[in-house]
Image (cartoon, rainbow, N blue to C red; front, side):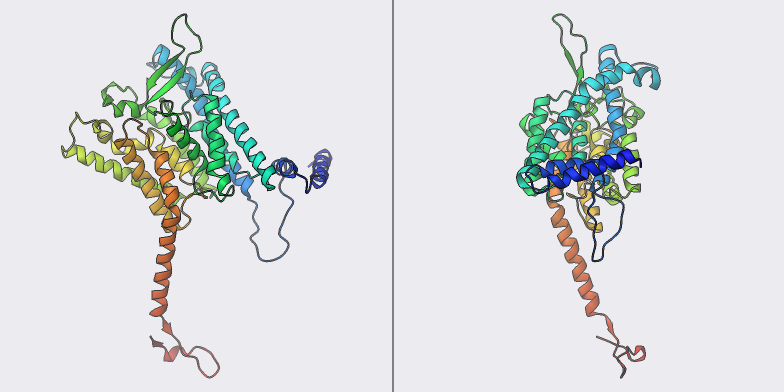
Length: 424
């Protein structure tokens, strides 16, 4: 570390002490904490020495999200030009996808969503920190990145700003801030948009930006997503291959499409011990089980092709994981350590029902064929109940073992005599 940097840090430290006790102290402390590691350390008592803190944890999740964000910016342009000119017959990653024209569309459409999400969200965090006199928490660093990735690309900026204010205030601050909320803030924002502005959040269409307005012509094109085709029993009209679905060259919400990159991000979070592999694996199992049930119903002939549920019910069970926001929700939303189940056994139940309910809602709600965020929010509410019964079950088992335990009588010296053990 250079002397110049040490001097800068020392000056900030002096200013931090100067603002101590004043109304704007939390705002200044947030800047100091963002640039440097906190100076506070424990001095007494037993504690675990570790290099990670909340800021490092949040930054790790953001690192796992950055590839998805970059891909989504290229995909925004790719979907735009493909909707206008048609999808290329001989697809080339370098010539058709990783182009400056595609990336530029992503910059002018995705970047403003990111700026509004962070700007409005952090502003609300600062206001609450100043009013309530507590430190600015780093919890919104991940939420601010998640929100632009789970909304349609055409979401109006003012609408996103209103939803962010609602999500931060109602979803987190009223419960006491980061670590105290019972609902995932990013999903709270998405739910607000879903119920307050349903025509914008239908989930069955994707808006394609029209860079050049034609005289008297439309300035945008709406195209079906895969879930939209299936919900309307128009699977035969789809031209997307399994590889398109897996690698993400399909329309959808900003960051939900690249299943391959989401999978890599999930492995990174598991390797860094930030996210729970139990929740991810059980959620995948739950979605596969529900998908198999629906496929079985179709194969048994209980649902005909004229049924409005036929398209999504007949969709191969494993393909549910590579379309829509299911994979994104499982990796980045369901694994939230604050709102998810805390016990190891509870995580299996928690994740399983998220996957199970996601596919169920997706099938039985064809008007808005995406159910992962509703399933996660529902299980957020039930996560404490799941943990309660898991803990109570553990207590009962231990009490039963204690009751049937072997008690060793003590000899004259107070030591256990193993030769004269008796069972009670």
